[in-house]
Length: 234
Image (cartoon, rainbow, N blue to C red):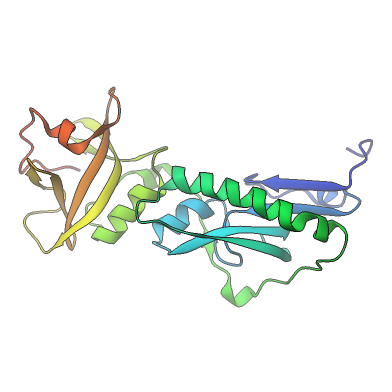
């Protein structure tokens, strides 16, 4: 590395603490494009956790890299409003586009010293923990909002899942249904006009699924020829 002249290192979605010798190497700056509006959602999974928390907006921050996770000075931000049908896949594309716009707008000012940056307010820091394999398994004890947000946070990949009998069933899209209790958690309440399932505080409507060994399909197609009423998903 010492033999490679370098003015700038710019990273995005690297996911690891960069060694100090690397941070010290560029002549001008070592910068990062972080997928949240810092100081909110420092950490490994800011895009997923914004959805999981049901936030109304998120974005990208152009920031200084330091030897502490996502803690450096902030130089500029690009906000993104989260749509009702937003998921990890669609939001990742928006984050990528916003990062390009942000870089074009602000990078030269940072490198030329025109933009000195702003320190983060440590009292406002929150963290975006890494998505673990156990987070992908849906909990029918969730509220409607928690259930739908978890589906959004990891769709289309890796995809939130449950089990129908012994078969894994990925649920790729869902929305909140009626409030109230019609059965036990995980019970299929309706499988004719729509596929609804009981969770802690009401019903969720399953919109899109990926059955094991098959292609993605809408819930109505999945229900054709199946009598799923009162079946318990787990």
